[in-house]
Length: 309
Image (cartoon, rainbow, N blue to C red):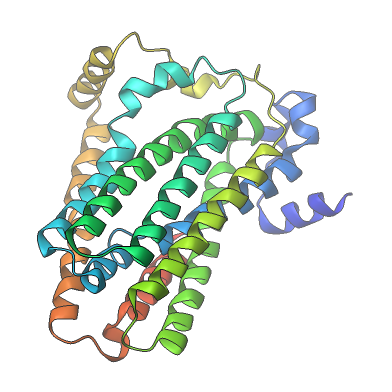
């Protein structure tokens, strides 16, 4: 048994039956591909902590003197920008033979966007800095959209059922540990008053993480001819965005469990939309002790650590 097989088997609950359903070439590469995906997703989740639209960016806006009204745009642009374009982009992505290259492209776009944010944090301030970061965040969300569409296909082609969710949970847990470490480092080195220049270095580190993610993902051995029967209805090529929205409307109307799921997730939007305002209130009231940005990042990391797996 190879080293990658031993490590993968130690981390995952493997299902021999599910693995045997895959082609022989895929079976040979399950462990190395799985470890690469865990590492790549861990890098992405860790990078997300450096450019968190709920904590880091609102704090950066405050230190740069960006008008407070712009902080309310951060989470909507981050979330909607990575989801809404999928209706238009999915048919194009489905034409690509090796989907891993879409993930690589998305990671590089995110790296570029975060590098732009870092430059704005280091050399600009006020309204112009805020508008630059908002524009870069929109570009970042586009890159995440590409990554989100294609990464599920890559997992479906390389990892058997029953192990994909474990990989996502493991990566999220690892990112939680990184976030806690990052938060503690900010508290120790940055203190209560974290400057824009300090956050610019943090964003630059995030850009590096996405570049490394692209390199790791490019090493995945993907077999394009593997079909996923369970996801055929989801991955069926769509002629237009209108047909996509019509398909969603039919699902909401006819699938009770799916409708309940969407309703509950909609109620949970408050957990995504409210943190920037909590951060802004913290700054206005004079953030100290664990109320500083390090405390917010630690709290986010703890949530990922507890809930990810």
